[in-house]
Length: 296
Image (cartoon, rainbow, N blue to C red; front, side, top):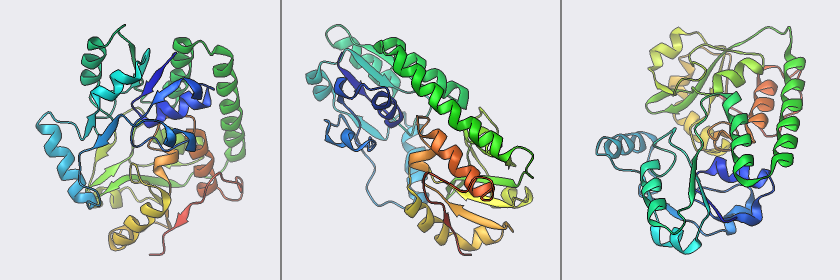
């Protein structure tokens, strides 16, 4: 089977299921695992590089209002790759090429290739996506193994934080303007032994105000700008240090959202372990990645 992945979390899942040799094309944002960087890239970003967060938000809103995507799909390259399966998503218009555009392209190709859209809104649905891909690619055993390993790691976290006091947590997915993380993130916070005071499990990330965040009285603020790694998240947090200081939280932490929170793929369980370490370092002393404390 020849597979083109049009969303990073799908690429990660395909590789985790042992399908690396069948993936023939990915997006320009598919940076994990490293082997994905060597594959043909069938998309490009139309936004100018180096834009400030506020400018990015404004540009995304403008293009969305005009019915335009922030990504361009290389139709000719996709056709040359002759895919049997195209994996995409419709959950977030900021994260991938329009699913309608993908469906239209598929119908023009020989076959035509099957199109699967992975659109999880909860942690449980991300596990369901493993089964969806497994059924389409006939890797049932690999899927069962991945699901079992993930479940064991999640259970370890739940047991470690059981009975611990639950700190009040605000997870910020963007800082200019402020966006509160939704979808699976509130669930991860709860599983890690915290109380998400702003987000709603299964609901989209939403616009908020600094005043609303302050009124929620978070004890821990987690800065997780969508698509940014920990170092870039720390830079953003430092630029908004005065705003973050005004929230009155005991601690502000910057994390790698791109790897562990923005993408609903196999590494969400790493994000869960990271959250447990942030919220309960005495009970979860080991973490898969660093959490950068913001000095306010």
